[in-house]
Length: 142
Image (cartoon, rainbow, N blue to C red; front, side, top):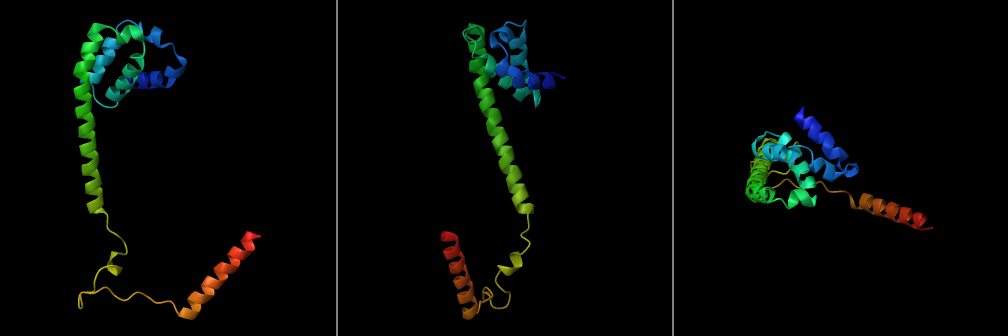
């Protein structure tokens, strides 16, 4: 329920008076609590709303809030690093699980150790293709 309310507040922030929100009884303290101790997605929504409320001078200039911000920055940076690490691990996991469907065609043959020869297009056919493309270009230029 709290996550839904914060998500709605974040969507409405551009049209709301941030000063009035900042003056709501205990909202800033509750946001700090959610940022520090809650699970996702509540933590992310609370962080976004708290950052929006920091634009209000009365919130930003309070000494207690500035001290909490100083303690909160390293916590948020460590969360970002953890998320990046998790994302990289997931990418590696997905990459190792992915099998290229036509990979056998790019592998060396087992007997000779060399790649199989590429299919050759007859010179006459390739010349006809090039001439047809040249004609298309000429007609599209006009």
